[in-house]
Image (cartoon, rainbow, N blue to C red; front, side, top):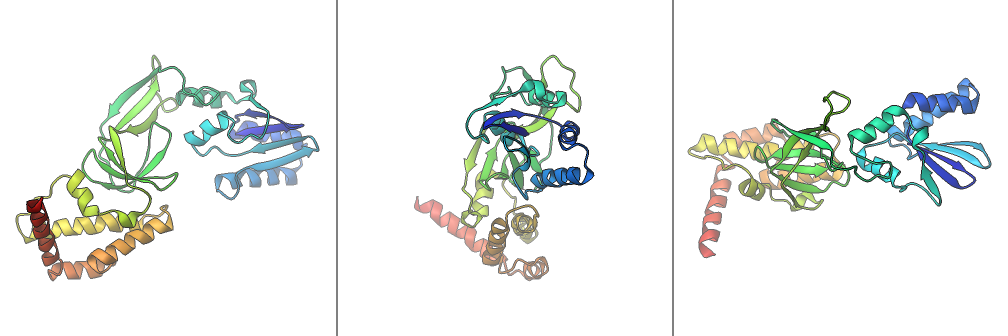
Length: 296
């Protein structure tokens, strides 16, 4: 994403890395030390060290560039979210493959969707905890737990919102009338509806979620009971261990483990599980549910 500022008037356009470096090389006259600075500041935007790299060419002209972080940010750029004052988008200055990306994502140069000319094809997929899924609405979500084959506990990568996605399905999307290939296919999910649970994981009862949205566990003996307890432990442990999640989410998952199982350490949990420490706790919980159900 590139913004050129001339005397306060801004022009937006999209360049691939090769074209951007070529443009920067012309502006800086080929000085190696200057180009090293250009590369360093640009890659700083990719590593979240800064939002934009800034090249000041004169008192009245500057170039600002940033790696695009995804479809939501691209929509914001196209709609002028990052501009101050008068601005325009110049499609003629864009790299050809960047225009192709807009077409593949069904975006016009103003950030709005093109006419509905996309084909969706269902893809069979077994969802699992830890994978990051792209939603066709432009956002990315990490799977915290697969409550059932089509109901997922998700966390938005943008704002840490925790959501139960009901009826989640995976699709491949590409322009109608075109042969699908690696460059034109967008893979992502859609769901029937979402249940939004907020951002505080400590307020979420995983047992209730499993009862409400998961497949019922068959508990016919002590072995089945302990398998169920082990799954519940690891559903929260996977959240606590997952790199890339905010520290507050991982810390909250650890607190949930400590409060529920008395430990967050798998070795300690396994020993207590084998000794039957948790058996009575879950039997008592089932009895409490039955009593609550009778009183309604």
